[in-house]
Length: 324
Image 1 (tube, rainbow, N blue to C red):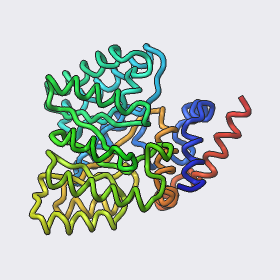
Image 2 (cartoon, rainbow, N blue to C red; image 1 turned 120 degrees about the vertical axis):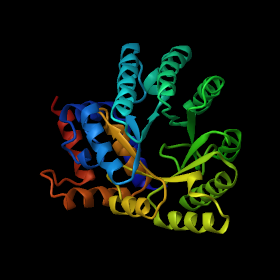
Image 3 (cartoon, rainbow, N blue to C red; image 1 turned 135 degrees about the vertical axis):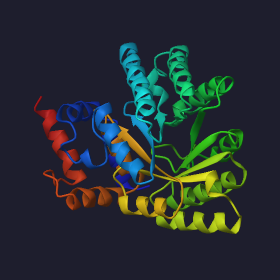
Image 4 (cartoon, one colour; image 1 turned 180 degrees about the vertical axis):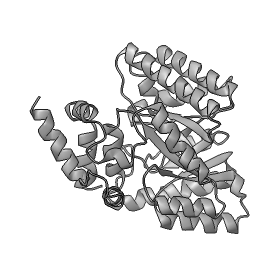
C-alpha cells in the first residue's frame, strides 16, 4: 500500500500528537475538512449543504475511548446533535463509532449508550449508521448492530472492501442501509487485500451487488472513475436513483459534490466536527494519497490564513508535542 499510507496511519494512532492537535485546534490545515468544533458551527455548515440539495451524515469525532465519563460525554453530545437535526429540520443523519461509546470499556455499557442514541433518533425518524473500525472491533460492532436491529429499523453499517470477508458481511446485512468504503485502517495480509488494484476490484464488485440486491446503497468515493462506472451501471440495469446515494467527505471535491446533486443524484456529505479531529484527518490522508493534494488545494483556493500542507502540519504537531 506504500509508505505514505503507513506513515499517516502511524500518525493517526499517536496519542501525543492527538493531544497537541486538540490544544491547537484546527489551525494546522484541517479547518477546511472539519466542520467546526461545536454543534452550532456544524449546524450552520449542514444548512449550507442542504441549501445546495446535499444531505449530511454527521460524525461527532472521537474513538478508542477508555474512560466511562468520556463515553458518556460523547453520548450526550450525539444526543444533542440528534436534537439539533430535529429542531433545525436538517436533511441529515448520524454516523458514529462504537469505540467512542465505550466498546473498549464494556460491551453492555456500549450497548446501553447506543440504545439511548438509537431510541432518541428513532423518535425523530433519524437514521444511525454504525461506522466500522479496525478488524479487532469489526465483529463486536456487527454484534451491536444485530442486537439493536431486533427492535429498531433505523440502523445500518459500513462494509470495508479491503477485507476478504466483506462479501460475506455485505450479504448478511443486505436488508440494512449500507455504506460501502474501501477501508482506512492498516490490516494484515491474512485479513485484507494489500494492493490497490485488488481493493478497487472488490469495491466495484460489492457496489454492484448491493445496488442490485440491497436496501439502500451509500457509495463513498471521491474517484470520478468509480462514479462514472456507477452511473453507467445503474442506467444499464434500470436502478432507481432512490436506491442509492453518492457520499464524499466534507471539504473534498466540492465542485463535483454540487455537480452530482444538480444532476439529480442523491448526494450526502460526511460532516465531521469536534476537537478530536486528528485521527480522522490523518486516516483520510492514509486512504488515498490524492487526498493530500485535494486538501492543500482547498486550503489555497480559500486563501485562508493557514497555508500549510498536511505533511508540514504533521511535522509541526510533532515539534509542538516535544515542547510540552
